[in-house]
Every structure is written in C-alpha cells, then in structure tokens.
Image 1 (cartoon, rainbow, N blue to C red):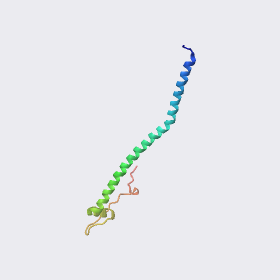
Image 2: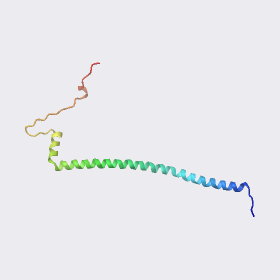
Image 3: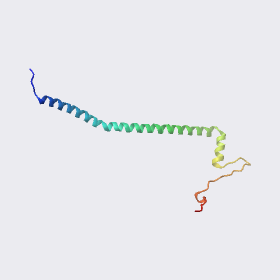
Image 4: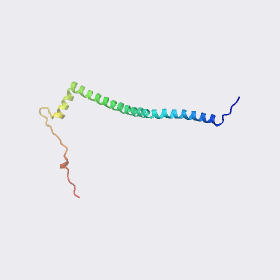
Length: 109
C-alpha cells in the first residue's frame, strides 16, 4: 500500500535538512571566536619564540663578555684604558670629542 501524502513529505524532508543546516551553522558561529583566538595566540607564540631566541643570543654574548673580563687580563686592561682613561707610565692619553650641535659651522646662504 503506497500512500501519497503529496507535498508534505517533501516539506518534511526540506525542514529536516534546514534544521541540520542551521545546527551546523550555529556550531560554526560558536567556534569562530575560538578559532580566531587560537590564531592570535599562535602568532603571539611565534613572536615570543623569536624574542626568546634574541634574548638567548644576547645572554650568550653577555656571558662571553663576563668570562673574558674575569679570565683575560688584556680585556681588563683595554676596558680600563677605554672607560677610565688609565695609561701605562710614560704614555700620553689623548681624548677626542665629537663636536656638539652648537659647534657646527654655519653655511652662507
């Protein structure tokens, strides 16, 4: 026995399809902010990883400098000469200073 319900069968299938479609769209809308937040956090994590690498390189350079200051007498001597203006007996120290902004020559117009 085949009962013809006409348009109601087709409308029921259409409504069920629309309910399923609306369900998936609602799930997608709920997860869009989470996806965007995830992308933002990944970009921030990459930036922080890059900053960590830079800081590790700087730390390695500073550790090398500290090591040379503690273990290399020539480095200590060079730093004393440069920073403190020390000299060996009999040496003459000459300091060169860069001219300030007020000492620049004025060009004629």
